[in-house]
Length: 242
Image (cartoon, rainbow, N blue to C red; front, side, top):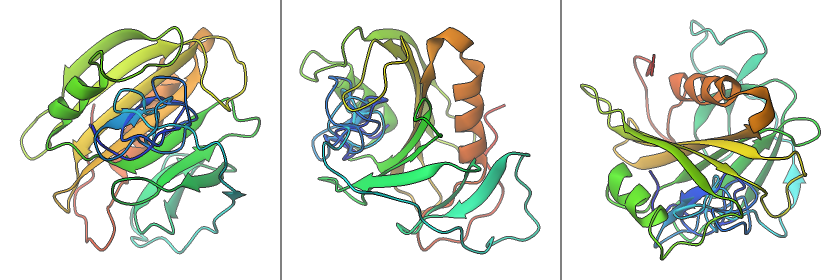
């Protein structure tokens, strides 16, 4: 989605931006920023989110900080048990698991690449802006030979999710490791790139162990997206990926 999203070091490796959004981008580099500008790479790449091809790289040096939860902008909205509706200092709102900590790294494109990690850092949720003009263009760049991938990169699926007012695509893949991330065996990454209510493209990337199945990463993305609202925007009906 964020082909040029700026997150190179994202472990998830999908953001093309070159900061990585999730530890390392697809190439296994920094994970919190999507490789920016030119490509939003997912984790493992140098862009936010799992940036890899268009993936973010995990920031090799970014200070971790725990951001306070701000009042829910929509008291009537509900989030699943175990999640908090959270307004990030970058201005966007989403639902994230309770007790997760926040880190961020600067991106070559748009806002900082933001990562939320579970205790022990075995799971991660990454958020960043995509630089490419469309989700498909972002993934095309990320999956091309021109974009380095994380070690052991293996594409599982790439789906177009366009439906009515929603424009987005979702990539799932496996990787052996992401720079700066713990050794949990094979990683499973779900990288979603989509157009938000402000008309801009964003990426949400979820990282976790392949050994415990893939539904937990998918649920993390579905829940985050259902409550996602970009900066300086009033959002209406939540998006449901089904």
